[in-house]
Length: 86
Image (tube, rainbow, N blue to C red; front, side, top):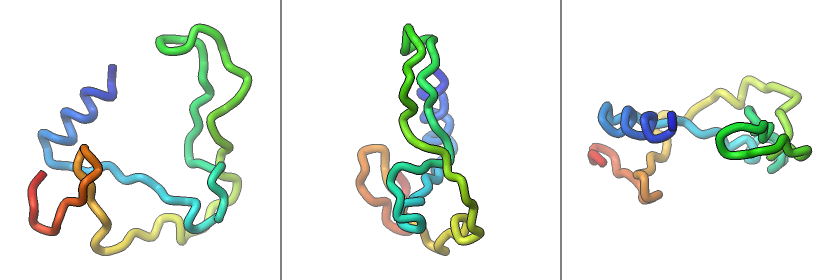
């Protein structure tokens, strides 16, 4: 149940999580920085044979370039305007 605590921590401290949009740079909607191996455990009873995506195999420095004023979203997906608190 770490996810609910992560959301609580981020909301309480008015922080944002950064999500990558690698498809813009790679043109590949399948590659990812992380994958879910669907190991047996809390949510899955048996190891599944298919991963949810493929790991990125080539790194480019432009992947880490962030805009000076990135888009910020509320928990409901609506945009947070500059200076506005969520």
